[in-house]
Image (cartoon, rainbow, N blue to C red; front, side, top):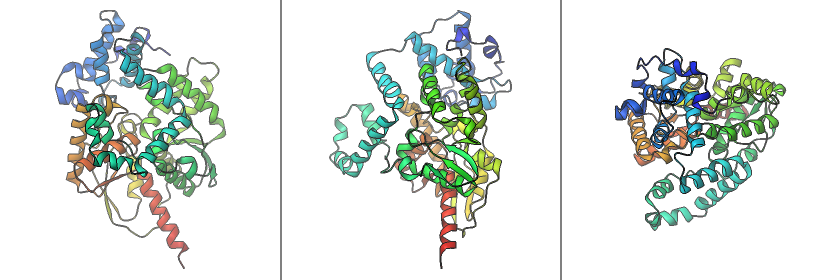
Length: 432
């Protein structure tokens, strides 16, 4: 697999017709009205580098990291340009050329991408520390004394967004095997395992309630999505091999993910390991069997819960890598509409990025805040009690935005809402 623009299949770069239909769908172009801040301009820069007319410069690097990678342009493109593939290749070349390198950036990337997110047990340990920070009252004291004012400006903003780690992780909530029927493997993710482990538990329960034997390996590596999207393809391939060593696709009817960003990347394992003779066939089989949970329930036929109606107004935010990356839009809505009493109200610009975009809210806080405000304003117009979102990054970002806006609306995964309906059904049938 090529990790440089000059060794890409040139046809991939030639596909762009420069028609500009992508521009109105690009959040960064819409905000700045600057050609180079849109997909068409970025592809022109990539092609100039591939042609040898332009060197990889710091300005090019900064532009590619200004892009959200939301893939809205792929949905809009009439020529079928695979922008995500070009984008990941460009970032890999930027990292290889080191045009953005500096000691602080290098240390942060090395610590996070190559240290923390390649070691699931270490990541859980950090998650446990985050839980203790909040549960011990240290966070409340720190904020009550306004000690965060002593932090550098960027860290001050991050401290306010510190995610709430859960008391129990996925392996403590889900038995290794549960249910019976079609045999599936459930992926628990890394960030989701720490801050939204209950979503993984809910997913396992929903799959079991829909006739699946759910296998959940207790310690799972990161899928490598974060690394592939941030110019570290070698680490992404390393993590993909670890995942294939842990879960053999031949043993399962499907491999299930409930995180949009992870799912979009997990489906590319076949391409990612195409040049690896030891893993190529397994990776192709993996890509064929990898299903988003909404997609899988739609394929096997969702069982509608028979619980009493519990009136609730819900709106649905479409995670970029679910609607644009995987083209899954109707299935989550089908899940929500199957829940008795739930009123689904459509969200304006539901497919517009919320500004989370992996670590974009950390690296580009100003643009991220603009997009989040736009999203929260639209949510406010719906009057919804709950915002359904199927990606941990979106979940945390929107929850932070709602809290800062003083909204009472909460955020939940569509599968968690379905799981609650099944529990109500079970409790009612168990009642004397």
